[in-house]
Image: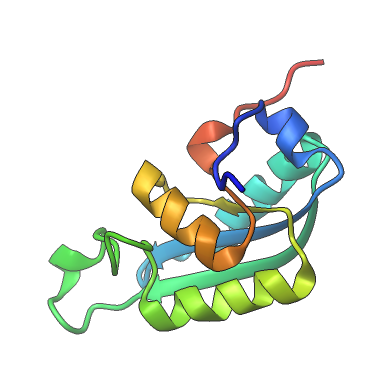
Length: 130
C-alpha cells in the first residue's frame, strides 16, 4: 500500500475518515485555530475529521532555538506520540492522516507504515475550486 497520495487530494479525501496531526511550539497559542482551518479544508475536500492529535514542543532540552525543529527526522513527532497517534489511527480505521506540518517523502513512508493510512501534508492541499 502506498502511504502518500497518488491521486489528487480531492479523490484521496472524498468520503474518507481523517485524523489531523500537528507539531506546534509550546509558545504557539494559535494551534487550535490552525487545526480548525485544516479541518475546514479537509471537509471542503469531502473528508470527515474523526480525530485531532497535537504534539507540543516545549522549551526544555535545548531551549527556544530547537522549537521549530522536528523531534525526529523519521517521524517528525516524538517516538511516544507517533506510537500513540498510530494506535489511534489504526483503531479508528482512518484512511488518511493530514499533517499541519510539511512532510518529507521519507517521513510519509515511515508514518504511513506506522499509521496504516495515506499521509498528506497541509502543503498538498489548496482551497478547492467550485
